[in-house]
Length: 133
Image (cartoon, rainbow, N blue to C red; front, side):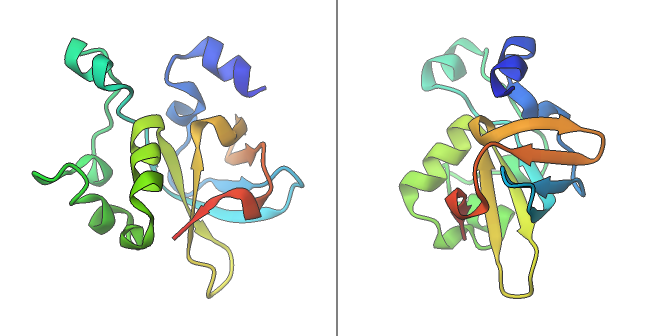
């Protein structure tokens, strides 16, 4: 089903995701709710050509170090390894406010979104496969 979204829209299913939507994993277990959505920067060559997708809002704010504002924007992002942050910024992601008092945040990439319908996002992976902050 994820391929369907990619064929339908080059930015994938993230364009249909909104803050507050419920997020479920591949076993239909509730992971949490959407905290924020970042469409992604695309490749460096797409940025140079001016064809990379953009996302307005607090997640798109950056300082001169490119990633400097990310940890502030996504709260807890300073605990993510640099390679994970780079990947999330390039491909886009959903920041998920995970269910449970000590759960922290989870991050699902575009490729991990199976379906988006109504007020529900269903992932193609188990919740323990998501990047955690």
